[in-house]
Every structure is written in C-alpha cells, then in structure tokens.
Image (cartoon, rainbow, N blue to C red):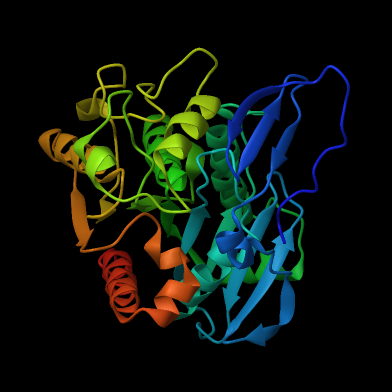
Length: 346
C-alpha cells in the first residue's frame, strides 16, 4: 500500500497538525502520510509496464519533474499527430501520487477512449514540506519540458521519441482532479501571461477542471449540507488547504479561491476554453459554481457539466464505478463530455 510506515519515536517531537487517517505533521518538520482502511486498495501504487494491458503501456520518466506516461497502443497512423492530456493529480496539495490505482484506472481508460497521443502526469512536490506555489512551479515546468520535447532538445529515448512523433503540440489539454483542478487554473493563467512565444510549439488548447478544490474561509452551503466521505470531509478541507497555502495565509488565498477579492481580476486573465465538472453532492460544489459564474461574468469561455447525485472525485473510485450503476453511468457521461471537449478543438 502507498501509506508510509510510522516514523520512529523521536524525543521532544510533538504533533503540530493532524488530518485523521491521512497526515501527521511534527514539530521537527517531518510528515507521516497514510490513508483510511476503506481507501487502502485505491492507494496502492501501480508499477509501470511495457507489455500492453487493455491497450495501454505505462512508463515513468526520470525528468524534472518526474512524469508518468500513459501510452495508448495503435492510436496513430504514420505521420498522424494527436492531442495530449497533461494531468495534475489532487490530494489537497499534501497527499497522493500519480502511480496510485486511484488514478491509474481512470486515466488509463481515458487515454484509450479519447483519441490522444498520451496522458502525462507529473510528480509534483507536496505541502506542507513544499508549500504553494511549489506545486504550480513544478507542473508548469512539466509544460516547459513538453515544449522541449517538441523542439527536440530533450535527450532521445524510445518513449520521448514516440511522444515527439505523435503529439500535436498545438493541442495540449490540461486536466486536473480536486486540487489538480486548481493547478489547471493556475497553469492556464500563467501560460496566458507568458505568451505563445515562450511555449512554442506548445499551445494550451483547453483546461479541464474536475471537482476543483476551490474554497473560502467562510463555510459554503454545500459544505454544511452535503455528506462527507472518506475522500473529502470538512476537516480535510480546512487543514490540508491551510497547510498548502503560503505560511500565514488562509483559504481565501488566490491559490484556493481564484474568484475571491484577493485574486487577480479574471477579466485580465488570458485563458483557453475551460470545462468545469461539478458533482451536486460535492462539499465544494458551491465554490466551484461561484468560480463558474465569475469566469462567465469575466467573458471567459467555460462549459459546465453537473454530475447529479455525485460527490467529490466519484470517477476515481473504481469500485463505485464498477459496482454502482449510477456512478458508472455518470462516469461514462463525464468521459464522453471530456472527449467532446477535446475533439471540439480541431
């Protein structure tokens, strides 16, 4: 399982903060990460594999940052180039890893269902050891690495060569679940601010925010009324996001609340088309919808998919997707909507 072994007892070390069953921060700066028993199987890491499984091979690149690559088999013909998904994982900026089964099953399936060259998922530094903007800087570096693949600057290796030959670098889509959705917003905004020259031949064609981790210091109605789950409860929202933002900041910080008064005016952001996915039983539903309304008011192009009767990151729970007909159907609707969004940029 992906949970860490408990650190040995160290004299004079005290607990500074604890997110029950997920994280303990000690006074010496060390961190223990684990996970609740019911989530255990989904936190198991999936090792990379070269032999195709269900039409996919998985590769881990020792780049900076490290990147997990999902390569679909037989999706291109000679000379054909396809769009690519750059995925940012969630976990409140404090937890999680792209190798977890939680992500593998959904993004492997997405790579085969969509007609894409690959899905890339960078490993970014976690808070509280590395508070924001460390994760933002890291995933933006992954975008710059992709640019280097396109320009031929990256050391040649079979996986990189495959990417160079099959990616349409003008059709790079960012996709992120939970806190990864926040990263999609930040990287889209940063890409727009630096302009196309720095990123050429890469063009960010769209951003897909799946149940983003937007919040405010003041409780929203959805936080008060919607049910908690092992993957998201009020204590996790409060503590993980506070541990993630710069020291002394609150959940009103722009990294968590990009629609708040302290955030850059949305009218001035140069954003690609966006797809926002919201579960109506998600604790963070109302801040997500507030983001949607703010983006629309600012004149940005943003589509909304409301997943009825669904809670936070429902599509990543493979057991619910496979065992509950409603969750399975909503996940199919989600995948189809992502497919249509990507294909709309031709």
